[in-house]
Amino acid sequence: MNYKETLDWLFSQLPMYQLEGAIAYKKDLTNTILLASHLGNPEKHIKTIHIAGTNGKGSTSSMLASVLQEAGYKVGLYTSPHLKDFRERIKINGIEISEDFVVNFVAKNKFFFEENDLSFFEMTVGLAFDYFVKEKIDVAIIETGMGGRLDSTNIITPLVSVITNIGLDHTQFLGNTIEAIAFEKAGIIKSNIPVVIGEYTHESREVFLTKAKECNSDIYFASDSISQTYSSDLIGDYQEHNKKTVLQTISIINNQNKFKISDTAIQSGLLNVVKNTGLEGRWQQLGESPKVICDTAHNKNGLEIVMNQIQKEKFDTLHIVLGLVNDKDLNEILPLFPKNAIYYFCKPNIPRGLDGSILKKIAAEFQLKGKVYNSVSEAYKKALQNASKSDFLYLGGSTFVVSEIL
Image (cartoon, rainbow, N blue to C red; front, side, top):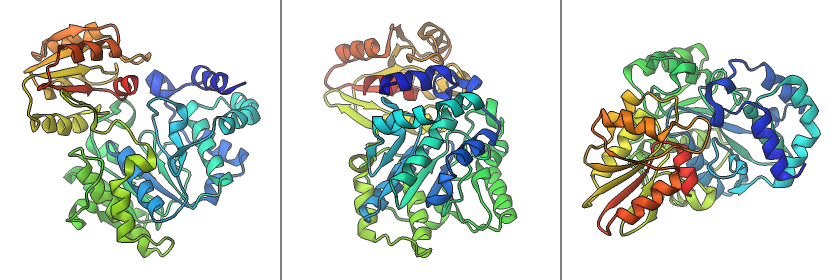
C-alpha cells in the first residue's frame, strides 16, 4: 500500500474516535500492552513527559517540546487529534514522521493489528513509540488521547506527569462529575514520579492529593507556585495557565539533573512554539481587516475563556462561523456564545458532525441567529463576504471546523 492507501486502511478499517466517537472508545489497556510487547516494548527505552487534562494538553505539550528543542535536545512530540494530516500527531523537533515510516510500520504489523483487532489509537501510539526509539530521541512529550487511567499512552513511566486541568467533557466515557473525571486523569500519576497540576478546583484537588499520596509522588500545583511567566507566541488568554504549568514542569526536570534547560532556552522556547512545533488553531489569526481568528476550543471551559477574549476585541459587527460535533451538551455550550452576533451554522465534514439545521434550530432557543450553510468553507466564504473591515470574524466550536479552513 502507498501512503494514501495506508491511511485509508487505518481510518476506515478500525475504530477512530476522532471520526466516529463512542464506538471507538476502549476501556482496557490489554491491547496496548500486547502491542507494546510485540514491538519490543519501545516505551521502556525512551524518556518521556506525560500530559493529561481536559483543555490545554496540546498547547502545553508543544510549549514543553519547544523549550526542550531550544535547549538543544532531540524531542519527540505525540499529540492528537490532527488537523490536516495524520503525520501531525508524531513529530521530532517539529518535523512530521515520514510517509515511508508510516507505510512500512503498518505493512510490517498489519497481520498482528487485524489478528488482535487493534483500534486506530492503539496502533498510532505503538507507531509513535517505535518511531521515537528508532530515531534515538532524547525525550518525548506524550499527550493522552482521552482520560488517562485507561488511555493507550498510559504504559509509560515518565520523568514527570502533568495534568493541565479538569472540566466536564467526554462525560459519557469519563464520568459526569469533576471528581470522576479527575480520578481518570489522575490515573497517569505513577509511583514515586512527581506530578504537576496546572489548574484545580476544590473537588479535583482532593482527588489529586489522594492519588499522589497513594503513589508516594511529590505534587506541585503550578497555579500556586508560579507567579510570573514569560511572553509566548501563543497569545490566547488561556495560555497563561499553560505557561505556568510548563515552567513548573521544567523546574522539576532541571532538578532531576537529566536535562539542562536555561532561562534563555525557556524564554526562546515559549516565543517560538509555532515555528518549532507547527502547532496551529490556538487563537490563530487568519486575516486582518476584518480580523479573523480561529480556535479549537470545543467544551465549556475552553469556550468560556475564548468568548471572554472576543469581548475584549474592538469591532463593529461580530460574525461567528460555528460547527459542533453531535456528542456535545448544547445546553451547556450555546449559552456561552454572544447573542449580538451573526451566525453561520455548518456541519464539520466528519460522521460525528452535528447537522447545521439542527444546530440552527437549537441555537435559536438561545437567541443565536443566523443561516445554515452546506459546508464550513461555504460558511467561511460567506462570512468574509459579509464582514466589513472593522468587523471581527471567529471560526470555531470544534477542532474539525478549524481543520477545514487551515
